[in-house]
Length: 423
Image (cartoon, rainbow, N blue to C red; front, side, top):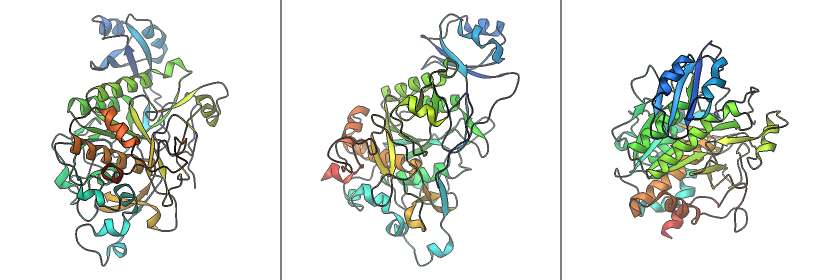
């Protein structure tokens, strides 16, 4: 039941939810990466070529311009420009499958933690069956920024932990309410505290919405969200999203470099950046071999943002601690693993969490990453404002080994386990 994507030859970034929309207009948006800061005369020089400045992110020296593709080569030759290329539009992220809990699955259950007791196998796996709740549950001095589809701010299991300052980067929207479900599920995995209980049930969470109810997200919206989260001082950034990039096409590397700069900026600002590995069951080890999955004989494809410097990239496991059938993997790419569930005949194979209007089971590396984000939040709550690299090392050094005693291309340094931090 593995899902593959139809791919375009130019290979713009693909999120785990589908195929990007292709901009067919006479003008389109381009990412421009500067050597240092944007030169003072760049806006005027670009305008002479027919490009209008749309946005500029001073923190990472990246701009967005709008103009005709035929003038791209001349844009690249402007002084101070390091890279320039088309901005991708991404389909909204989706779990591999969604099973909303129906009334019959809720009947006979009532009270705090009841759904966690019945359906929370994955959270129990990384919390020592809930033993870590006696050690640390987080606090609102520690905030996880969730770059996703938003959050259902009215959900009873989440409302107590939503801290002020959520933002939307989707043009035409005024708030960060979730109209998809994906971001609410991620949020509950981290910090639900009600009928379902997350990994860090007293931790602050904040939404950075980059996907609307329909359509996709531009690279610049996600880069803007990364920068905003860093500037807001969040402790952890969860990005249950990702895709692929053709590095051998120079027209299409600009937004990869922009991502690298934004992640570096976030880490240097003190944030731990956690990302999902992806749901195509592909090896990410060799960029040249990965290109052949796309029918490209001579090229190099990488996963973005998973595997980029500064991130902690997470693969997915099933109820038996085996690599999930859909999970990407790769030597030197995967850092750790966490339960993401897998296809199965019942809800008990899925990862249950909060969902707009109720609760749902989902599967995907999108469900794995927030478990690592929750553990990172617990470490920050217990040990204070320690450097991101130290948090990451504590996570890696306290895993359960699933494939020998060392590093595994499937599981990285092993299954995350917050209980090992206190044991």
